[in-house]
Image (cartoon, rainbow, N blue to C red; front, side, top):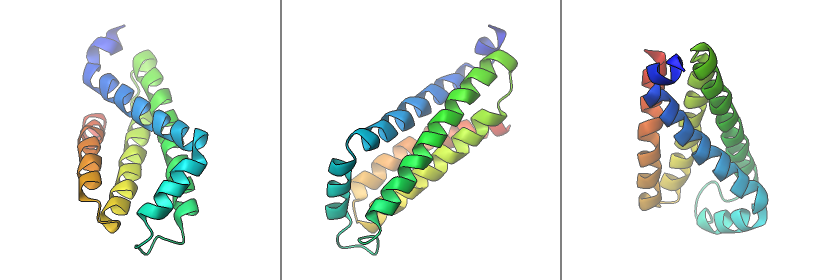
Length: 132
């Protein structure tokens, strides 16, 4: 219980990333065709137009691994006070968000890019907290 009191910000940020990435990955798994169809249209005028399935799969796997690392990291931070796995999850979450940001910028979806930036702020703050 001491670690819950010692790391409340880190734990809440980990929960935020777990919800964000596992839900996003689950949505991609459960509605692969719908996501693929929308993204093919979204990227039709970009250099990514012929790589959408590969890029969608890459982002999905990255989200799954980031969410799982954050989940394991949450547990280890509570039980052992060890934030190393949580840090790896937070860094991978940041990389996933940067991939998404690049896609939104390439598609000239600046509102979408702004949304990604909002998610990036707590993720990079968690990296800062866990790295300190």
